[in-house]
Every structure is written in C-alpha cells, then in structure tokens.
Length: 138
Image (cartoon, rainbow, N blue to C red; front, side, top):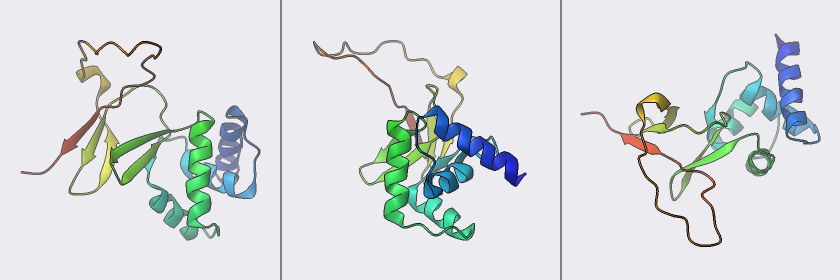
C-alpha cells in the first residue's frame, strides 16, 4: 500500500509539473496517496505530517500548499477572513462548512442551481464561483 501511495503522490506532482522534493512527496502522499479527495487546513496537514514521522515546518506546509494551488493541483476555499481549506477535488462543486466542527465537506452538486450570475466587469471574466453553505446544529 505504501508503494501505491508513493506512486499516486509522484504522479500527482508530475501532473502539476512540480519537482518532487522530499517535503512535496510526503505532503502529496498524505493528500492523494489513498486516492480520496481531501479538504485540509495547513495546520491539519502539518499535524498529519508530524504523525507520519515526517519533519517539516508549518511554513513549509503553507508554501507547499500554495505551490500545489498555483500548479492547478488543488484549490483554496476561504471560509472566512482567517480560515482557508485546501481541496484536492478540482471540479466546480459546492461545500458545506460545519461551524460546530470547523470542517469543510463536499455538498451535492446536483442539488445546486445557480440561475444567473452578474456580468463580469469589462476586461474580466469569471474564473470560479465558490459556494460555501454554512451549517449549524439546531
């Protein structure tokens, strides 16, 4: 299983055209090694990295996540002004943000209907629409 995880991580980095440094490979394996999509915070990925025995700094995790986003491997989902999640699923889809758990999950895309968007200002185009539906228990 470790070999498959390493191969998935290396292939993912190659798809983004990124050099496979030790830190990138370790983080890629944690993010995509099992073939599942992830919503992670930098702090959560940092903790998982430490738990796996890999030593990286939190700054390296942040920088690497940004590099993954710039390479088109992940997208950043900003929940509020100070909390970002990084999503390995790259298609357009909405999210649920569970306020009591501080967790971001995928919401059913087939249940979302956006009927109309405002026109983009002249000289611009809409690059992406983020839909984050905040949930709290009642």
